[in-house]
Image 1: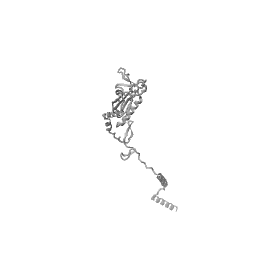
Image 2 (image 1 turned 45 degrees about the vertical axis):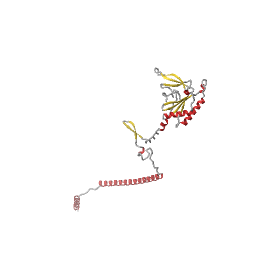
Image 3 (image 1 turned 120 degrees about the horizontal axis):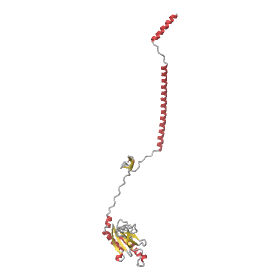
Image 4 (image 1 turned 90 degrees about the vertical axis):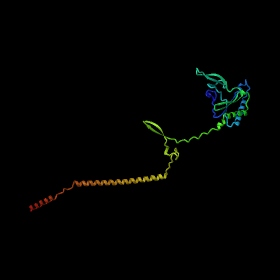
Length: 290
């Protein structure tokens, strides 16, 4: 509501309300100015409580009440709390030549003898009662009804009733996995929309891990025994086959050596003519000797 936020400079505190609310400026610290007034702080407290109770009964919706939120600074000015008196505030104005904030006037907040009530809604601020102007204390029931009329004039209740509820948030999409791809020696991260574990959309939860059947320990033992027996049979058959192949190889080598011996020592063959000539020569020799 303020033209300038004074929360950081020690002036008006920040007020955050989404709907309508009530601002009350009332006198406090009455014991410090008893020398010039006859104020009773208990009386201010009682009227404040009566106003809050009357508002809770008269208003359709709860109206928050802010008491002494701080002084409002005019547009183009700043407010700073005095270091010596917590009820004094300095209004600062910017010097166009030096660009420095210079004090222009000093005000007291809250004002002496004040019980001021404002109705605040959406940037508007309308005063509904002023004790300083009227010179009297307010009637709590009358003031509450006046505040309700101002709220109806501004359409507070109608606006709050016509608020359309926000639609529900859409369901979150399945988280996509990130795949790393490199191009020209530089790593580039790309988002992959493929669901984890190859699950099809609509058939099951994309983020759920597939169920894995746990094997039976007894079945694993039997399968291991069968594998061991098959390995033993294979090793024996392989050994027998190797022995037969070695025997065949040795027999073949022996046959080769025998054939080589027969070829080397085979007696030369004699033709029939040579045999006939030898036989004739032998007969002639026998006749001569005879």
